Image (cartoon, rainbow, N blue to C red; front, side, top):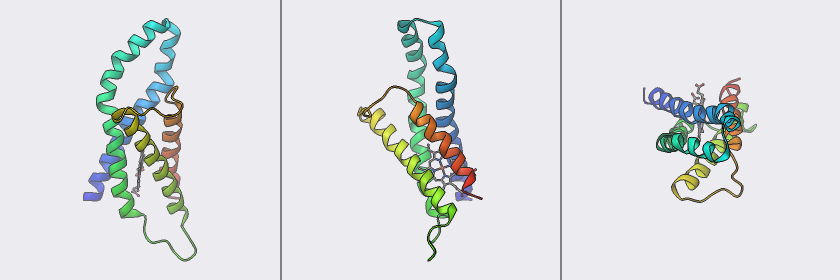
Length: 138
Ligand code: HEM
């Protein structure tokens, strides 16, 4: 029961975080075309102030619930080495933890990544994580 509950929270948090990145990268970038730079900045800021209240906490919840889930499903490593599930899950966890640390430092500590131009990197990580989260079961 606890596992199912935590997993549901995990998926929900992933939806909120991933959903924002999808909207930002696929749709919001397009409004640049209709406004000049100053207007675009203002419009973007008007919704980013709400985004900041919801999306970074969702990322943290995704990472914390993910850490719980991995302790429940990873299982022992056999003598032949890791199974493909364990390998893909480790890669998924690595990318998720990377996003979590990067997001936490950026939003709560004000430490900007070396190059910050857009949300393309987190977007590509989330797409990869979603594929890994399904293909790891094969
Ligand atoms: C942005 C970060 C993350 C996203 C978007 C994400 C997304 C997802 C998705 C979509 C699933 C699939 C659930 C299903 O199909 O049943 C999943 C499962 C899972 N995630 Fe994450 N995740 C993230 C971070 C993490 C982290 C950091 C860890 C571990 C440290 C983790 C561990 C797991 C585990 C263990 C499962 C599988 C549970 C099972 O076998 O039923 N996730 N995640």
